[in-house]
Structure formats: structure tokens, C-alpha cells
Image 1 (spheres, helix red, strand yellow):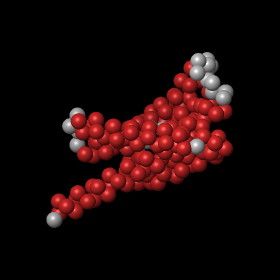
Image 2 (cartoon, rainbow, N blue to C red):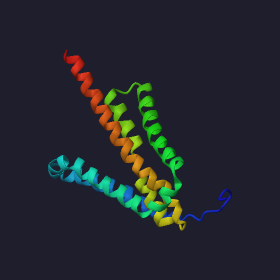
Image 3 (tube, rainbow, N blue to C red):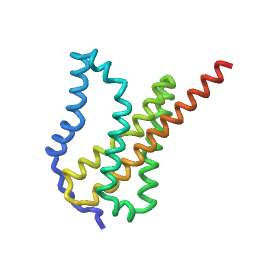
Image 4 (tube, one colour):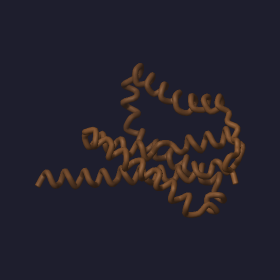
Length: 169
């Protein structure tokens, strides 16, 4: 049905959005860290909870905007999105272990890979593609990104705690 269809893409718009949503916050964070390290250190303890709240808002907003089409898409779309994030995290973990990285680096890479921002994909779909349904896979992926990434963090934490207890015995 859509195979072979030409999709107009606003490359400059996507580049601008990328600069605004990805590059500008990174540059801002690096700048703040360089020139105001004491202030950054004071703010760091609240960053995780702010991150969780922002993730919840991104997930809720993305899903709410395309709830009907998500429900109509059914299990195949859910399974594909879940597998994308699970496989990405698992593959990243294995690859980092194969190149002899320690457990902390391997786990961090796995979590970061599984949590690559589908919210950014949703934003790009919303801003730069005329077809409304283009947003649906990204919105589903946003949910699974949050579920898989946080689940991996919990599992790794539990495995780490179990390993520490074992070493203490």
C-alpha cells in the first residue's frame, strides 16, 4: 500500500530540530559544568527524579496524542517496539563484554542503548511529516523505551546487590 511511495522530507527542518533538541542541551550542560561546576554539583542529586518525571510526561504525551491508532495497531506493533529496545540493550551489553569492558560500562551501555530516545523520533514525526500515522510507531516505542530501560536498570541493580552479598559471604 505505501511501498514505493515518495515521502517528502524537510531535511533542514529536521536538522534544525536536531540542533534544538539534542545539540543545544548537550552544549548547555557542558558549558554549565565547565563554568559553574559547584552549582551543577548541587543540582545533580535531583537530576534522576527530574529525569523520571520528564520521561513519564513524554510517554504520556506521546501516547495520548495517538491513543486510537495505537490501540488499532495491536500486538504486532507492540512486539516490534518491545523487541527493538530489548534486543538493542542486550546486543549492546554483549558487544561491550566482548570488547572486554567492565560490568559497569557494559550495563550502562545496555541501558543507554535500550533507552535511545523514541520521544525525539515522535517529535520529528510530528513536526516534519504530514501523515498523522507516522507518529504511531514512535509513540509505542516511547513506552517500550521507558519500560525496557528502567527494567534493565532494576535487574542490573538486583544482580549487583546479589553479587555483593555473595562476595561478602
